[in-house]
Structure formats: structure tokens, C-alpha cells
Image 1 (tube, rainbow, N blue to C red):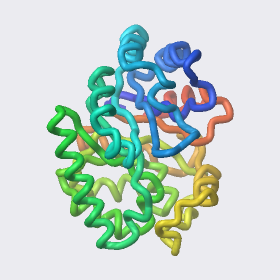
Image 2: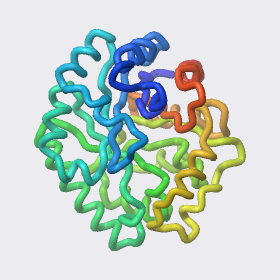
Image 3: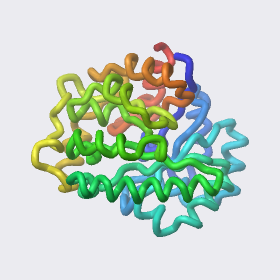
Image 4: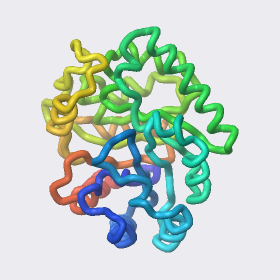
Length: 276
């Protein structure tokens, strides 16, 4: 493949903490990854919050020493609105210019009026982020597909006013061919998320079948059950990557949901993606 391969740190949530942070990143670099993407989601206890509580200058120093680039960071929608100045300042200090909203609550996609209101709020937020010399994008979590028509409306209404970060596995798992679906969108792409779904799992997450706006534990448990290691499922990742290359995407970011052996999992994912 032509692009660079990065790693979403959520993939290593079981083994990364304040003490192991540097050593884990060294191993990520040794595997071959060129960059990382952090994560902090609204009220999610199962996450790597702002680099394990480390200060911005320390994070910047570690990344420089290890030789990894800070590609982007996943942040919570409500966190960004509530703590905008703090979040922007932190990311400027660590040299990260791309903020990615990890996902918007499904209730904000429940109907056309909700979608249009969400588009207005997100594009205004994007413009404010742009004034800081940074870029804002939306990563599609499964709940943003509570209605395929709603997501399409969102993409159409947002246009180039808001960048997106398509996720292969999240699209596949709700019955969408990621390469074909995202290939037709006119939005700007900041990067692609490489995730996979178990064979036969396509269209098995019932978010488009009466579950609109119901973010509950059962949905997320089912979602994780349907995920698998990159390259082991039936998501056509090669086709997805080729679509991204045609659109001039530079970064392809691996994210693993279920990781019994985290480092082995991300190593295998890197090898698979690098071979395409």
C-alpha cells in the first residue's frame, strides 16, 4: 500500500497505562507503525484518557524520542464543547493538528431535523477549530448509522465544511460496503480507520432496525462480539484501502476492538495492511 500506517491506542487499552506508556510506544514503533492516534471519549471508563494523564510537554518529548507522529486524537463530542480551550491548547502543545470526534450519540441522528441540527453544530465547531490552525473531523461509530439515510443526509449537508474519518468495520457490520459507500461521498477525508468484522457479521448489528437513539450496553456488547482482528474477517479492506489511495489519503489507522493478545494483534494487523 502507498500510505502510512498508524495505530489507534484504544487497541492497546488492556496493557497501556502511565507506567508502561513509553515502553508500549517503543514496541509500536518497532512493529513498524509510523504514527498513533489517541482517544478520549465522553464518560467512557474503558479508554486511554489523554495519554494516561501525562502532561502535554511529556507526551511531546516521548513521541519525539520514540519517533512516532501524533496523527490525530479521538475526543468526545460533549467534552470538546465543554472544554474547548483546554483541549485545543493541549493538542497544540503535543503537535497534534487533527481532532476527531469519536462518534456522535445516535439520538442526534434519529430523524432529519436532528441530523440538520447536528450538522449545524458540528460545522460551526469545525470552523472554530479551523481558526486555531487545526482540523476537526467526525469518525463514524456504529450509532451514527442508526439510519443509513440519516448518515447520508449528514454527509450531504456537511459537505466540505466538515471532514470525516470513515471506518471500514463500523460500516461493514451494519451492512454497508465501506469502499463503495464512502467512495461516493464528497466530504474531505482526514484518514481511514481500518477495522474488521467477523465473517458473516455484515448487517448483524440492528441499529437500522428500530434501535435509533438507544445507546445501550447490549448494542455495544453485540458490536464487540461481531468485531475481529484486521485481516481475519470478511470486510474488503483491500478495496477500502484502494478507495482511500484514489482519494489521496495519507494515513490508514488500525483500530482493534477485541484484543486477547494486544501487541500480537496489532503486529498481525500491521503485517496484513502493509502487504496490500
